[in-house]
Amino acid sequence: MNDADSIVELIPRLRRYARALAGDRIAADDLVQDTLERAWSKFHLYRRGTDLRAWLFTVMHNVYVNQLRASRPVATLDEEMPELSQPSRETDMLVLRDLDAAIRRLPPDQREVLLLVALEEMSYEEAAGTLGIPIGTVMSRLARAREKLRAMLSGLPPGGGKQLKIVK
Amino acid sequence: MQDDAEMKEISKALHQLYDPVLEESVPERLRTRVARRGLWRPAAIAAGWVAVGLAAGVVAGWQLHVARTVVSAQAEVPGFVKRAAVAHAVYSPEVRHPVEVGADQEQHLVAWLSKRLGAPLRAPKLEELGYSLVGGRLLPGESGPVAHFMYQSKQGTRVTLYVRTDAVGNRETAFRYATEGNVKVFYWIDRKLGYALSSADIGTDDLLKVANAVYQQLNP
Image (cartoon, rainbow over all chains, first blue to last red; front, side, top):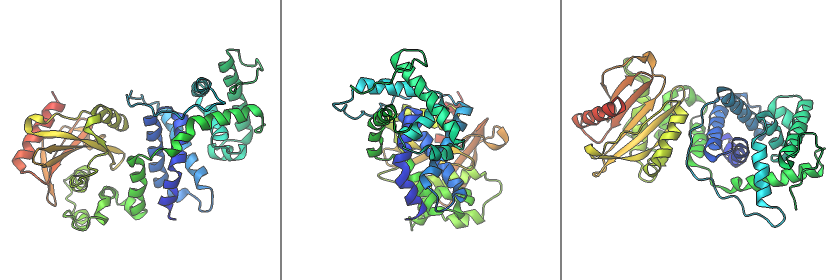
């Protein structure tokens, strides 16, 4: 499999992460597109034999951070969001959406850590490598993210210590 | 800590919310981005505008000879004009996929391209001259994204409008004319934006009429 094939195979993973990170579909695919362009132009920096997915996520992280810095105004687009999956029996869709909305309100650095660990199922070490930060920072950002989520979902101030309940 | 129940629930919820994305078909603009670069990598990236002409390797009977154009590049014709001509030669013969986003989503197309170029764009209305918008696409330019709009007449003749930002010189220019292979191009620079209107299907006089209409609409 050549490099292009390997990258194409990872596009769905990049899109999933981007969708969770950036929110709407267009912004997420713009992020993926910018990531792919940058990845190709920097492909000589990729070390063969290392994890290509982690490398692409690093590229996406850098693109994302640059975009935040430039804070380009987001055009309002009226394309419909895709239908979400059918709510399963054990999890209430409203609760899911609440969680999603709460994650969006997290500061970007905490949201990234949370998504890499909880959605991409990276170890703390992998997340640290992807974001280029120490493991201790990953752990503290994750702890802060969880505390904020708990507070937002329970309506309690942070530090309330209440366990997040998202399953009935 | 990663194994605790709360983290598992967050993880499960995120998968429920976002795993459906994995099943979606990947938009063409993302697939072609890789395929396009993939074919030419690595040498062609340095070759700049040639990368636009991905199809050159595929379309055997292509009239615009990329290699010759590069070598005999006339110094006075800006690079973006050549890129515009190549883009026209590549995309205008397309029957099934002439554009990335169709005219039925014009509002979205214009908003998207404006956002990517960082400049407010408009797709001129050319119905009075017998041309309707087919749609447009995003293309890689010399230093960033460029916009490409395609128009078609009832007879099937096509003209394309190529718009780039950060035009060199930032000076307004009169219409200039260039040919690349069988593609005729009228181009002009207006403040930040460079425009190139191309066609291989119609005469110079008709193309100039279209160029005038485009210019007047974009500079009321």
